[in-house]
Length: 262
Image (cartoon, rainbow, N blue to C red):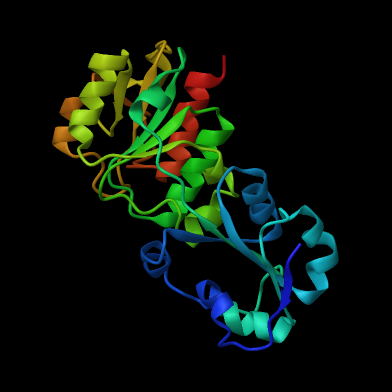
């Protein structure tokens, strides 16, 4: 396998790792960065293309063996690697991957027991990474993101997802109202808006439909009126002691557990 020593911060081969912003990586060939041993191992086990792997010299012997033979490995001493990636505390393992074409509604709605998570405008990368991990854990068939949701391949989102983003089919919708109606009309998916509303049906009273999509709003504003009206029903987690909401990823875990525990 090709192993190359890096001895300069300016080496163009490690340019994608030099603390570049996520938007810059996306513009420069749809790249993304996977960091930490566990996440990089999941990237290697996935079908995402890998452009390169950057290793601290002390990690070469154990990690080089699992890197595909065609993927170049760049090796740097700890001090230089810290300078390249921009922070002191790291595992000495990082990789640059390339995005695949996104999934489609047809793909994620196809299973007879499809469970779909929909996030119209989730703008917090940590929350999105957590939702991806939770959705994967409960066996969701896919995630649909609205046009204003944060990018699931930002470094923080990938890291918090613990690499499950590489296995989870993700659809990027450009017209979420239309796609919610398509899910119901074309694929017989019951679309359920999760809301804070005493007139909505309490979660414990809602049976599992054959196919379902759970729609989660951003924590402060919740779901917009047009998204709620595009759904087939409204459901809620009854709250006590004056609590007005839960973290969106916590709420997603509760809803998904309810509908998948059987």
